[in-house]
Length: 259
Image (tube, helix red, strand yellow):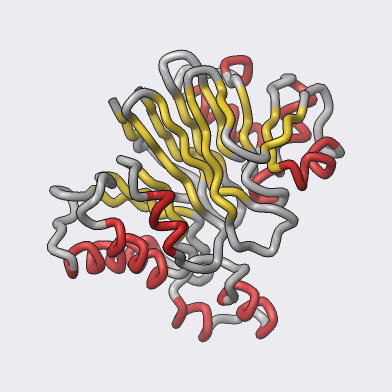
């Protein structure tokens, strides 16, 4: 059994709660420490109930809360091997463990996906417990066959849908920043996320969480409509064949349960 609860998702910080029958794991801890504690309390959890924090990469919107967290609670941290030295510089009383392949946290097995992002190292992750599998891939700039294969076996996926290309190109960001976001080492657009969903249609995926939306270059409506249109183009009906949820930066109430 797996339960997945997006807590915070966006440019200001990211954090997802993943629970099995025996362990509670945070994927990233990039939003405010106090806000994260409050979100956990609303789910009847405290920091002491978290068995591990798994880090995708070293950017602040994914690790910003770790210094304060580890000063208060010595939760083990798992991070890509190439960035563990960077992470160790930010923690206080926690052990930091290298990730360079598949590993386990309690009854959850974890597989990795190498993202294309302008970080020292960035991983997407697949969490499997029993017959349930959930994958999260954000902060990657290209759609590949490898990405499709990684997501395809899962019943639920969290997929980046960062920006609407037209909004980004017309927006106030500098040319250099626009090019960075649009590059192969940037972020997936709504159109790219839609392409991934088309590739996944007809497989195991029944729940999609669109994540890491830009507050300046996207809207929930644009991301959702792009995903629904992609599913419809393959004969899939949102809400019947596949459920689509758009994760919010501040408030998320959905919990996905995989038996």
